[in-house]
Structures are given as structure tokens and as C-alpha cells.
Image (cartoon, rainbow, N blue to C red):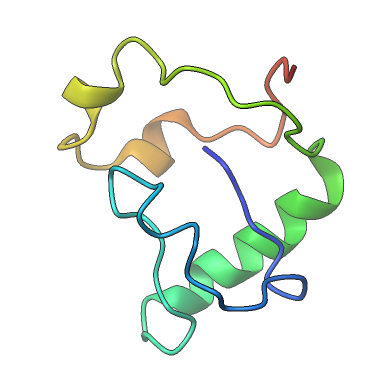
Length: 81
């Protein structure tokens, strides 16, 4: 999971086509409020990504999985790069 700090986002839309699972919502959508808060909080404590990496090996099969956030979310950051 990647997060974008909503206070730093300039709404340019560049990230949307780069997100294969289409997980980026406009902040005007009703479902976005929960994600805005999660993004704001995690962007403050997770490290910035400075280098592109390959998708996770199971990314394509996990695309359609439901309940991923509840099953897999952790406040602990990944290894980073």
C-alpha cells in the first residue's frame, strides 16, 4: 500500500494512471473520507518512496481480492528502498 499526503497533493492526476488497481479516488467522492484520513496519518509516519520498484509478485492476483485493508493493513512501514 502506498499513501499520498492529501495536504501535499496538487490534484494533477498523474498518479491515477500509474495505479493499476485504480485505488486512487478523487477527494470529492463520498468513500474518500476514510482514505483521506488514513493517507494523512500514514504519510506522516511512513518513509517517502524515492525509487521505483517492481510490483509485488502477487499484485495481479490480489487485484480482485476483497477486504484487503482489513486483512493486511499494518501501521508498520515496509522495508522501503
